[in-house]
Amino acid sequence: MKIDPKRRALSACLACGWAAAAAPAGAASVNPFEPSTMLQGTTLRLNGSGTRYRLMFKVYDLGLYLPRRATTPEEAIDMAGPKRLAFVALRELPGTDLGVAFIKGLQANNPADLVQRHAVSSARLIDIFSGKSKLVSGDTFAMDFVPGKGTQFLIQGQPQGAPVGDAEFFAMVLRIWLGPQPADRALRDALLAGA
Image (cartoon, rainbow, N blue to C red):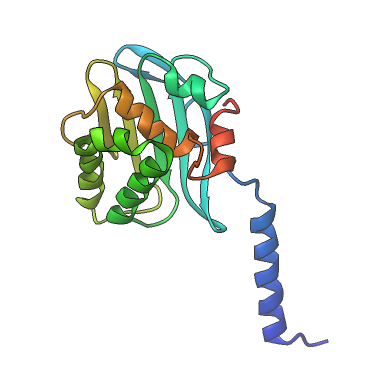
């Protein structure tokens, strides 16, 4: 029996759609993150990790490293000590788009006066990603917070200028993923679910 090529293509598309719908939102398919890392002499543990989806497309994997376990957004945001957000791009990401998305997340999850107070540090975030035309699948970037020094942005493990901001600024950054209007609710839950 001969199968119509259009029918075969439609079946394949539907199967892909079902597979994407069945994928656990927010959960990383293969965890690319080490269980622990060192930052300024402090051992940080992978608190949780997951995948950022936009529609049904994977955008990046994200790992949250903290000095000790946190199970709520408040615990993670208010915890003292160094912290790391580590990312692995899963598709081509234009640098400017990424910077703008982060700023929108800052604005959606923080009071306007707080965002205004940290406008210089936020502008630095846009500058860093706008300065790179794009990230491609497999590229890494990170945001490290070290008390007394600020937030260091890294692309492919390389520091991008001097650290900026303070603990309040990094708390704002964390709220992009852990705040009341997170970039992805399933990802927020994965970051707090334990590694």
